[in-house]
Each structure stands twice: as C-alpha cells, then as structure tokens.
Length: 358
Image (tube, rainbow, N blue to C red; front, top):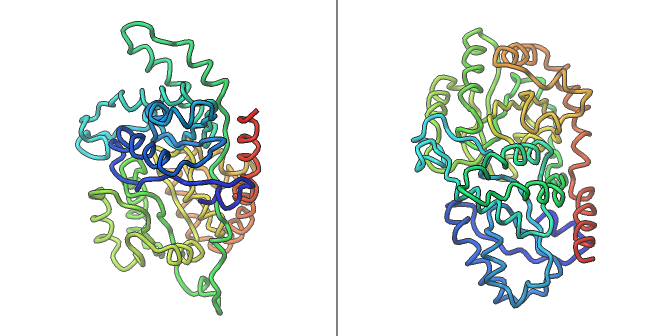
C-alpha cells in the first residue's frame, strides 16, 4: 500500500489475508490468477511476493501476461528460514523439524520464471544464494547448479519502505518520560524464530537485581504463543503495561513512549518493526547478526549491536541506569531511518519497473 501511494505509476493490488502460509504457496496463485483475469487490469509490469507460485500464476494468466515482465520480491524464503529446535512447535511443526523442500522449490521455480528478483536486505540475498547450491544437490539428476549464477545476475537489494508520516509523535502536554521507569519494548511476532526466551531471561535477571523498568509486549500472534510469554506475564507482573496486539494508534504511542527496544531474534531478513521503533527515537539493542548490521549506521554499531547474551544483559543494565544518555542517542539515531521512507524508496522501485519494460 505504501508503494502504491508513493509511486508515480498507477498500481492495482491483488492480495489475500496473511494466514495459512502453506496453502497460500500452493493455492494462492490459482485464486489470484482468477482475480487478475476477472479484473482485466492492463498491467505493464507485475510485482509478486515470495509467497506466490509465479509459475502457476503465469500459466493460468497466459493470454494476459505472456509479454508482461514480472518481478519477484523476496521478503522471506523457505530455504534459510530457521526451523524450530522443537519440531512440535512453530509454523513447520508438521515436518517435525525437517524442512519441506517443496516450498523451497516453489521459491526457486518462481525466481526462474521472474524477469527480475528483489531482496529486502544484503543478508537475505547472501544467505539464499549461499544455501541454494546445497539445496540443488538434493536432486537426483539435472541439478541445475548453473541456475544459481543466472538468478543472482538478475537479483538486487531494494529495502521495504516505511510510511513515516504514520508515526508522527502523539500530541501531548507534559513529557511524562522523566516521571516513570524506563520502558522496554517488544514489538515483534510472538514466534519461536524471534527467540523470546533470551529476551525474557534477560529481563528476569534484571528484575531480580532490583532494577526499575516497565515492559510493553506488542506484536502479532499466530496460533498458540510460546509458553515463555505466559511465564513472563506472571513473573514480571505489574512491570508489564501492555500485552497483545495494539491498534495502529496504540502502537504509535507505545513506540514513542518506549526508551529501549530489544531483539534477540534467530531470524530477521529485514526488520520493519525495529526501524519503526528507531524512527520514534527508541534506542535499539540488537544482535550483531542477520540483517541488523545493515539497518544501523556503522557509527552506532558499537552502541547498539551486542555479541552474546551476557553482552546483552550488560548493555541493557547500563541502558536502564543511563536514561538521559539513551534518550539522546535514540534521538540521534532516528534520522538514520529517513532513507527507508517510501518517499525515498518509491523512485527506486519506479526506475526498476521502467527498466523492466525496456
């Protein structure tokens, strides 16, 4: 939606609800192809996401798309997305900890069928192409190893955009931040790949040490949430000021109220929620891995990126005892998010669309 609003081109969105991800990868192309045929939208370029089986979509829309360039945006992928350590939990529980390579092949075949491929981060691009040869070697013959180089040649990194105008600070009177304990924010999905265990274990230690802080737990939940959330809600008690999904207005207010946002994730190909927090002058503590070093300017790496659980604990302890320093650093860091606004990124997408038509 943000790209549609900021682009110089006329765009039409064809989308399905964000649920049943396996069925989306199997049947979504059939449903969306039907919607596309019915709409008869005169597309000059098509941009699909990694959840779409592009080969099936093109086959079912051949009279309308045989000469239409199509791009594939890789926001996620099913090859390097981490499996849960406990095969009975997480979205891949049916495989009991074994990756279902069929969904990887949908990603692979969709990339082959696309005219251009976009990744949301360099980390994502490198992790995919680093793992792709190993995946192809699973095939009994005709392993198509040469395809990796061809796919990489038509791939590039273009970040996801943010609508920073939606995150303008709420209109308030007195600054209440100086009259309350520091607020620590969790604003990621309540899933195993975000590693909430390490996050809460750090908070348990700091609470036992008697440090004063509050916690806001927001983010999307899909199915049964990890048990650690139940334990944390009980153990942290009145320190927790918010639990569960927040409306857009509530979420904006929490972002501006928060002093510190923490990630302990095992998986992050980009990090929209972290950028949203940073845009609202919330100081981030992030692991020095995944896509996070790309999101944070190098001059802030030593302040924001930690190396281990012990390092996180030490940095979080320091942040809670230096609220003014942390607040000032958050204000300085907020400007680093400006290049991710759709007003800056939409022209890059528009140029890619124009080139695809040549």
